[in-house]
Structures are given as structure tokens and as C-alpha cells.
Length: 202
Image 1 (cartoon, one colour):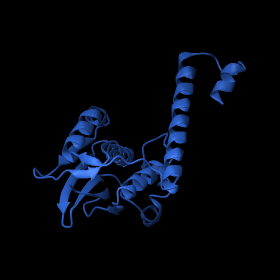
Image 2 (tube, one colour):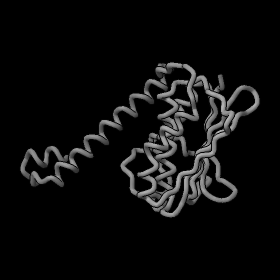
Image 3 (cartoon, one colour):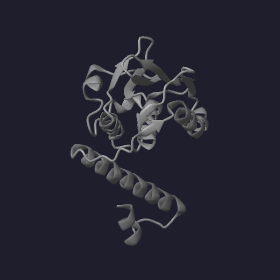
Image 4 (tube, one colour):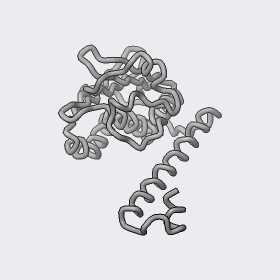
């Protein structure tokens, strides 16, 4: 490993090698955390603190966090939320995690000059549907069948390089289902992939 290389003198203690080691530690820590969340989900022990979640406010907060990064990548972010969007009965931190995981996936497949759209609609039956759509290459039949499987990664030739382990979508699925919602993916008629999930409205 990088740490052993530094310890044994196989790697020079340069800023570049320390930075690479730091990134490896962060990725390992993230992987451990992701696996812990999935283990809790399997045991039905995910901590969900339900409350009134202002979905519109949460999306705007996320926009402020990621918009500059997306602009640097040449990706445009669109937000399409109705003015009468109902709050949802959910754990705001968990919903934020779902949104960030889906946005991270969309970012990975969206080329420079492309776009990502976050939208939401109020559905009958006391539910809200949130959609995140990208202008990437879309999903193959195999992708659609396995996209939420743990460690599954779609064709890497169609994606930006990423250090992810293929657990983000599996975690998003576990969190949505822990709220009693549903999550699914499909190809958009105009091209690209769309991920949708539902949550109970207040």
C-alpha cells in the first residue's frame, strides 16, 4: 500500500505521494462507511429521523454546494420545482444523501457541454416524486437490470474517471426504501438517464 511504501522507503515522501496516500485513506474510509450503512439496511436498523423536510430548500442548498464544480466541468444544472411543492415526511440528512449520490452518478456520465436536471412533482396518493436526469449516454438493458446492485459499475468507457466503489446507488435505494418510498431508473426519450424516487408528502 502507499503507507507501506512510505514506511519502507519504496516511495519518496513527496507532497504528491502524501496527497495520493491521503486520497486513498479517504476512499477507504468512505468505503467502510458505505458498507456499514448497507449492513444496517440489511438488518433493518438504518437510523431514520423522520420530520418535515423542505425538499425545495434542500435542493437549493445542494445547488449552492455543487453548481460551481459542475460549471468547472462544463455541465449546466437546471432546477425545475413547482411553487406548490409539498414538504415530505423524511429525514432531511438522509434525503440529502440520496440526492448527492444520484447527482454524483449523473455527473459521472454527463459529458462536457451537457446538463443535469433536478425536478419534482406532487403525485396523487400523498407522494412526491423527485427526478434527476442527465444528458449522458443512457443506460443499457444490463445497466437497467443491475444499476442498484452493490458494486455494479456501468461501462467505464462511457464515464468520467471516479474513485467510487459502486455503492452510491445501492445506498440511495436502501435509504429511499427505508422511508417507504420507491426508486427506479429509465432512459429519457430525449436521451440520457433519469433516476426517480418517491417520498411521502406531509
